[in-house]
Length: 319
Image (tube, rainbow, N blue to C red; front, side, top):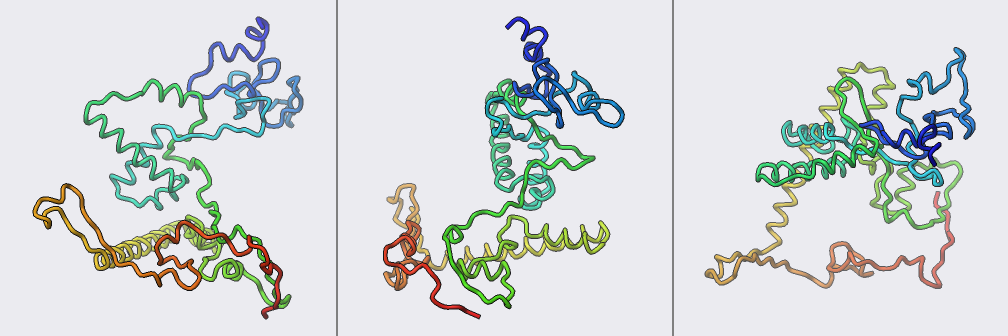
């Protein structure tokens, strides 16, 4: 144990370097930081053409290890980076001060839209606490961030945090479907979406940032950077106008279908509650009882393919 603490990996844990995580799986048996391309557990490393090891090119033994495996016996578990304070402040500034949309900030900083929304809400709470004079757990946050890899905001270069265009799993696509089609017919993603559900959009339309596909196409077409940025801003402006118009129509429709009774309408005897009434019809559930316009549809009905006696193989071929 004494040898491990003085000459082995343990010396890095007695006095860890600030600002970067120090994991057990980041060092070999001789206490040298592991690098990509390291061959064996005895500390042998691949040499390049200049005769230098990868550790020497990365800054020697004093450089922080690049291994993000905190548990050596579980190499499948990798510690993922978190947003540091500079990145969180930049997200809050762009959304609340510069009045950019969450979707735009997500595409600019390569941070998922759900994470952007969470950062904005939590930073709002933090600033409200500071305004009210409430104490913050700054030492605890600093200690936790010191043990995790971080994504910092860099104005000069892009520093992507995570993948922002992963395709979410739609409930209509979890079923196994046997759909025959002719060999001479081109079967596209739109056709596949229609097979699962007639109203389901294809994969290109269900990803969080479909506009990035157009950006990649314009880059492949050889358009200049200024022209690509101008077209992107125009697309974002049209999307924002369409979103605002849709929200306005939805709000107007809700006001027409919902009858509100305020406390002052009851002569002050209604307490502090607001009563809302909406007309409900039994026929709204449809013939099969699965219509989304009916009451209680969200509680779900088992799929037909889970029932006995259902024909699960194709009985016709559509050309």
